[in-house]
Length: 334
Image (cartoon, rainbow, N blue to C red):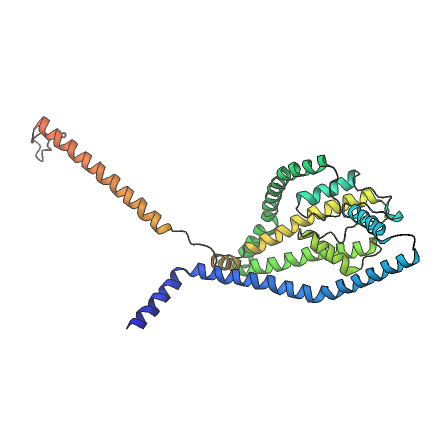
């Protein structure tokens, strides 16, 4: 008896807090996914890092042996200075010294990466004034960018998603859920072709040291606003029409980000995903609110009724019990 009561109470507890259990499982799955990614990245990249470290140590020792007049401390100071400058986008190499990081087109490209939160990190402000302005500019510009992207995506969704789905639903009589899934698949395929595959082919042709995988990697990392900064186009010394190229990349990144958001919003509007999201949300306590409103209305109605009753009682005392506001109707006509 006690076991059945305990089991039934546990079942009721789980049913009443179903969204909490779903969210706990979601949190556990996310942590496991993070751990899984860390294990894979560590096992794949750690051997390459170790090999690169060994090569650099061997190269450094060979350089010191060939230049005995140079001490290791002086070489360390020189390399540290060069690496610090490289982190700010300034290279000591002769073939990279002709490109400026803060001309107008490069600054425009930097501003677009800051406001879109891509942030490649290959260029950063050097002065204190530039760092302070970057803080103020980002604090105002990022919400402004979110507002612009939200408005642009909302307008595009009307013509790219809602109207086509409604048209197919009316003309062919298909279910909106089925049409929505098919439309989302087609839209994502077109976005991958025109904003990932074709630009990757273009970048692999324009950039000397990029293959197709490197170019596709750059496009995906950029449009997903990850922005690792290991690949940045237009930084080669022999880049033709560099200013125009940088402007084109800026336009591509903004348009590509809008298209990716449209695709993401299209998938979010699918009924299947809406039901999936509701599993992890807290349910609104509408019933309690309705009860409170009904109780408030009942109290108000009872108070009005009492007031009306007291008013009628006062009228009886003032005009007498036989007084009526409407004269009696006679059923006979003489």
